[in-house]
Image (cartoon, rainbow, N blue to C red; front, side, top):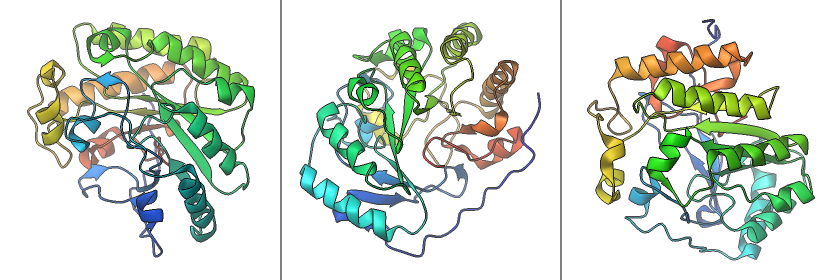
Length: 301
C-alpha cells in the first residue's frame, strides 16, 4: 500500500469574524488538539434531520429531538450569505450538513444554492443521505459540491432507518457526476460487523462501478460514542465494543481501527483511487499520522 508522503496538520488561526447572522454562518474550530479535524465554515440554515440513524450525533446535540427546525427566514439566510461572501477573505466551503441533512427541504436549499451562483469565490457543500436531487439535476450549478454519506447495505438495514438505500444514493451520485457536479462520499461510521470486509468491498464496487473515475474525495470514519449521543440513542447495539477513550468520545480499540482503515486504503488503491484524496473524520492524530493520511477531508477544499 502506498502512502501519502506530505502530511500537514497545522491549522492556521482565523484573524477575522468567526460568526455571521447570529450563527447562521459560523466557523467551527473546537476540535481538541488530539483529534484530526480541519476547521471549517458551517452554514446553519436549519437544524435537525428527518432520518432516524441510531448512531447519529444529532440525537445528542439536540437532546433527543431531531425534528427539522428553521430558526431563520430565507431572507435572513440570504442576507447573511451576502455579508459572509464579502467579509471572509479566503475562498471557503460552507458546510450546510453539519447540523441538518442538506437536502431535507429541497425548495429552501434550491434558493440557497442559487445564491452561491451569484459569486465565484465560495462554494456550498451539501452533505446528505437523501437521493432527492431533482432540483440539482434540472439546473446544474458550478458553486455547489454534493457529498453523500453512505454505508454498507448491511449497516443501512441495521441502523439507518428512514433513509434511501445505498444503491439509491449511489444512483443519485451518478446523475450528479454526469451533470458536472463535484461529488464526494463520506463512508462514516464504518462498523466492524460480521463479514465487514465483504460488506464494504461490495459498497466500494458499487461506488466505482457507477462512477468509473471515482468521486472527487472520500472521507472515512469509525463510530464515535459521544456521551450525549449514547444517552439519547434508542438502540445502542451500534456502540458495542466502544471502550477506548479519546478526545472525541469512545472509540473501538486502536488496533481494530487501524486494521479497518488499512483495508480501505488498500482497496481504494486497487480501484486506482489516489490516497491523496482520502481523509479520516474525527480520528486521533496519532493514528492518522501512523496511517499517513492527510487532511483533505469532506468539509474543506
